[in-house]
Length: 258
Image (tube, rainbow, N blue to C red; front, side, top):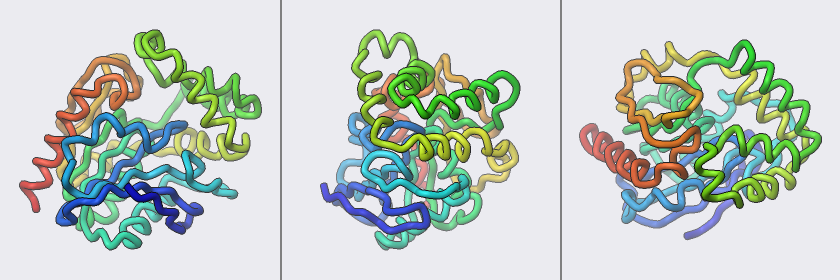
């Protein structure tokens, strides 16, 4: 595997490349406060083809952004990464924020995508008590250790945290590397300013499958085939075998339209 830093509109983005056939590469995009290692245990169905594991802006080994941004900027970032790697068409597997990026990119550039795997996609705009909660979390970003613990408890299911309590410390380590302003920008762009995506899903022309956890907060998206798996909002970690099976099925979808 080779790690590259690709210059984009959202700073230098870290990607790890796994070499393989380039006829239909697969790109992985993680969700908020995670990193590219989210996919380590579930990417085996794509072994033998080119795989691209992305650290999203201000996450993992990618640079801080340094200014306000939007989900649409993430679409531009993804296309720049594809162009830099000379990837004309690919499969995208996204989680949460990564799923929303993949969806918007496929709406704007349908010819660039063969199929999508949309894990735990928050397709409805937050409102009511949920919106108030996220707004308060944004303010708490100035206390990264405390905030990271609350974020871990919100994102991971209680069952997973009981089995793997180290996930809280890992979350704290990731967020402690970032300025509070960068964390707040992520919450603002990905959660508070995100628009309802129901119409995007209904107009999607690229083959896609969605995955949600049994206790996930995101709800069931319209139109798409939806697979419900055990756990909460981090299905690639909480239901690894199911996630591998879904990735295999998404690759099969891509083969049908290749």
